[in-house]
Structure formats: C-alpha cells, structure tokens
Image 1 (tube, rainbow, N blue to C red):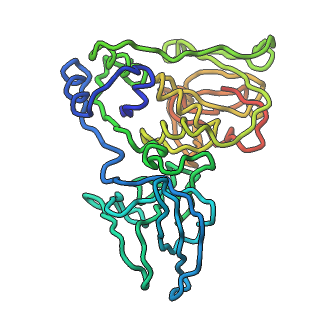
Image 2: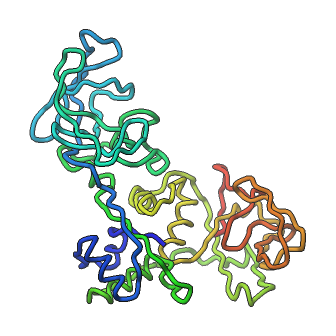
Image 3: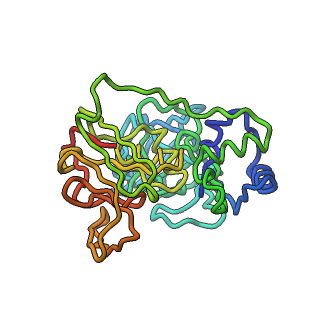
Length: 350
C-alpha cells in the first residue's frame, strides 16, 4: 500500500512532519512504513518561465534562441526542442539548478547539474525541461509532449515553482499492511491512523449525494447469488456522460501513487479504490445484457477475456460479475473486454 503525504494531508490538514518523522512515528504506532520516496529528489531551482521571443540560432539550423521570462528576470536559453513557441509557459531549470534525469528518461543518481554555457557559440543561461528530466514520465502526465518540453496551461504563474505546480513536491510512503488491518488498504484508513498517531483532527471526505428522482431499478437489477463471497453489491447509473481528461488534482494524486491517469471514467474508479479501499468498475449500460447484474461464481473451465486482452481460464472459486447473458468482469480484479468503455458511451453503470 502506497500513499502520498499530500493526499494524507487532505484529511489531516494540520499534519506538519518530515518524511522521517512520519516514518518513525507511524511505524511505532503500528502502521509499519517500509520506506519512502521524495518525488522532488534532485530537482533544484526549477521555475515556470514564459517564452517571450524565439529567434533562429545563427550557426545551427536545429537550434533556436529563446528569451524567457522567469519572473525575476528574462534569461536567454538555447534549445533544440521542436514544440516550443512564443507565449509558451514551460519549466526552466536556472543556472546552478539540478534535474533528476536525462531527456530519454534515464534517471541519474544525484541528478544532473545545469550550468550556464555556450551552445554553438551562443550564451545559454538555463534549460527548458521535459517531464522525463523532472523525474517522471508521459504515462503519469498524459498532457506532456512526446519527446518535447513540458507545456503548462495558460493560468500557470510565471516565476513560481514548477515542481509545486506539477505536484512533485511530495513524498510517497510504502506500508506493510497486515491481513487483519484491511482498513489500512486505503488512503482514508492510513490518514485516520496518522491523525491518531500525531494527535491531529481527522477530516473524512465529504460526500454529497446527487441525482434526480428517477428510480435506478428502472435501469438495472442487481442479484447476488453468492452472499458469502459478496455480501453487498451496489450500482448507480449516470446519464449523459462525456469522456474526457479528469481534473488535474485527481491526475496528480493518482500519479503520486503510481497509477496512470487515463480518462475521467477510469480515473474515478481508481480514485475511489485508492481513497476508500473499495473496488469499483464502470460499465457502458448499453452493453449490459438484460439490464441485469448477477454476482456468482464462475463455471469450471470457463474462459474469459479481460480488459488487458488476456484469456483467463476460471474455476468455481472465482467470483464473477455477470449480466443477463454472460460474464462481464472478475469481481474486484478486472473487467471484461466484452464491455470495454469507448468514447461513444452515453450512459454509465458504476
């Protein structure tokens, strides 16, 4: 189980500890911390800059010379990046700063120090950064350019910390959770332990029910045939769905614990699973035959293709989620390829 410190602080806002203090105290109180990773390790003097002017390099066709406003001053930076443009807001490591890795994604122990110098005879006083040079990947920051400089949104504040804007000023803790503490297989559970350990107030997530007066039973019927393996199964229908990116705060929290942001529907299910320790899956209601969910065990030798394209051979011990005709998911594990969500989805079953 992993959590980021910033996500824990969402529920324990008065928590003010170092990574080592947190590790020691949580372990002594019974929630063993195996280790932690500083996401901003080897990242120094990196701010948000804005490109004010771009000119061709006098002696190199593949290089351009940029005048970049970094808040306190305008500096000249030479780059070979193809995706930069005037007005772009980008991460800039200043002279004497440090990045975590190279542009090809290889992380370097201790980081790489950036110094002012000359590129083909032209002075350069810093470096624009890709997401790989900042210690992450495009998988975790899907909006990042492929093999290019990271471009911030228009509301990014010039001169402010690029590391903070990207959520890299964080710590990720890894826990050893024993089988008798399933409540700690969630961020909320860990946060509750942290509040008790440090004597701080715990603020659980506030959930406000929304919806209209329509009866969900008009859309879907739920039947649990094996109550020993699944004592409770809940379903909710959401209409007029639009697939798109999830909010940046949600993407950042998921990325901090190693979950790749995909889209709002997938990210919601992963977020709830991490926050509450509650598996959740999203289905296109139009692909649910008979408008019915049946929770039961598989047949011996039953074959089922999961979302990753792998065919699984099942037996009677495997709990399945089925519709009125077929299996649509392995309970709590992975959905089926036969009900894969596409961008055309209009009505969702959560």
